[in-house]
Image 1 (cartoon, rainbow, N blue to C red):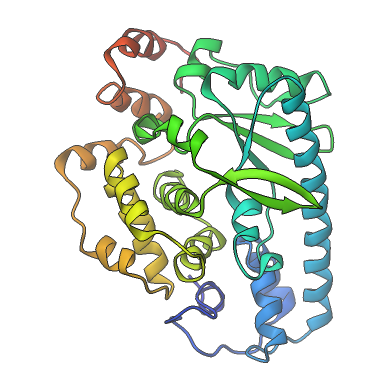
Image 2 (cartoon, rainbow, N blue to C red; image 1 turned 180 degrees about the horizontal axis):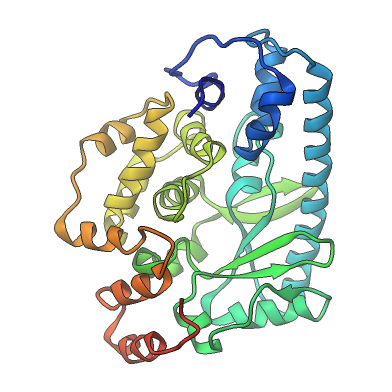
Length: 328
């Protein structure tokens, strides 16, 4: 991690790792900052007088373009939510667009896609409803039964060129099967998007989701995502006992601890981080976490690991899916 990215990730947190930074050269640094979704933070730090930029107007323009794209995403999201409601499917907004609206400075957090949670038994119906309005699946389903029972999400290409992810749970693989889907459906609040109230999860569940995404996403997490988690810990009005009860009830202590420790590594401070840094995974969790390592064959590895946690009634179908050539 470069000094600039480390500075931005921890900027304005309780114990940011780097306090000062050399002058930022736009041509050299801006693309990397944008890739980590930290352009809004760079602009905020510049306006606070805590970083110098050789061509500040370029950062302003880049952030304005990102905000314009985010507004297009909001429009597509609202249209998608309405389409789903018209066919009797209630969705819940996930990840960046929701988290940003739960924090004091939403414009610092810019998203690049849309994520909606839908009931597991309505995942195919939700995708079909959107397809009727011009959306297309990014890849064909392994089977409708697989999507409804085992797939973490379905990715839809919206006609505006944006990407929409329909989720049935909060994580891929075995830990996704441990998430209490009924709890997700019942634990909601609303956020305002362009004057419209949109259902989303309670902050505590966004916090758990963010930690699982960092730990189980399969690639090096973006620093913007780690900062989301850090800001939720430090700025949101959280019921800490509820967070910990949820993690324990789902059996997700190990991946959640990985995510929370990552937030601590960029300068966030919170009792949950203290717990995470002291946590040691059980042997079961070490085996489950290993199924997420490396890209090659990880879908099949995660499916195999899921056999140890799914209900007995689902094991035969999951075993059949493991023989499918389309399961990578």
